[in-house]
Image (tube, rainbow, N blue to C red; front, side, top):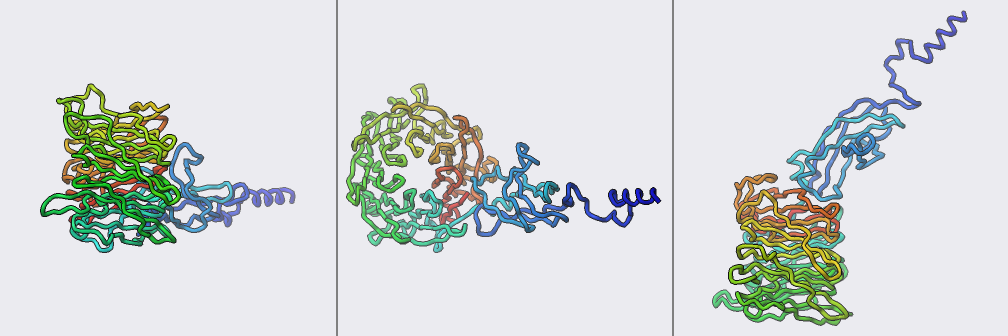
Length: 524
């Protein structure tokens, strides 16, 4: 009798009865989740950088965790979303979307207390990656509108302004988009009443970081195409009042061929505006600084200190303001070293101190450089502090290059030269540059890149364009990604208009000549 009691007790503790063999495994008071399959990752139609994850039920699971595979974390799980009760979820990528995202691996963890079961691993496929790239275009697109020639957005990421200078016989327009529930909607079209054919309104535009002030250039305003004279240029200022864009004023200083408004920069709060006039004074050039102090506008003219005996300076070939509007960088692509080194280019740094603008330095290429027409300064971009500067030199060596300078105690020094090894002759790498506000990310446009693949350089689609993305870590710059348009069309000029957020998490790239010149802007 005693032996029977011991045997019965042992069977109850260790499940020796064959009828119990089908029960779920119990560990530490909780049941062990069973094996399950992670089905798929899909893009979400209309939602930029957003993906749909779906998996099957794991018996005994209390909840689930979505993971990015990373060996530096427990269970190799960098947690993306936790405490998921259903069998699917949506996730909006909070970082910049580049082709490197295709290398990431994801999996699901089924949990019950401390007991877990890991799913299979999946990655986003190329088709879904391409579909997750956002795209905006005008609602009334026509051939040769050149939508995307200029691109600017507010720092909260909710307002996007896009220039289309070719609309209606080169009169031009600017389109304003706003983001709501992760969807971009066209809200308004701006087209002043005084525009005439050929004015090119929208050739440039800049919106303040707070999204309240917008400045639009029309560099050929008053151009007469029959006599081929004119082009003094104008700039138009708008303010966002109660979610409506209201015209404020016209800024103009130009006379024939000045191209006033070809390039524009604006401070974070919109109180300082820099407008280039590179054709002024027979292409010597000028830049005008406008300051709004309590509703009263004042202006200051900046001119190059260097007199070039070998040709006009083209001072104002590019312009960039710091966040507070107290530092401005100005390109002058026509400047020469000597008669054998013409059009090498230069960049001037001005600083506002005690209410006065002072030239601090003039940056130029090393004296050991050989050749000519490098066009150093064709594009410039300051970080928020005005202490880091990226400078494009798109004709250097027929390939292009980008230089990065840093300032310390009013002294500027070169810290990096960027030139990707895959470049081909005529790519114009550095025709456009944009530095993130935190100075940790850099995008470089090469709008005549010829690659026919969205990732590799094979020279099959002429002038399709590309953008190169660089990141800084531990004060060193390294190449991160090579980015092509999802459409990748011949003469698309992808990368001619571009912008990036302060933290490098959002990027907007124009392809002004895609779809017969209708143009598009892509969101990453």
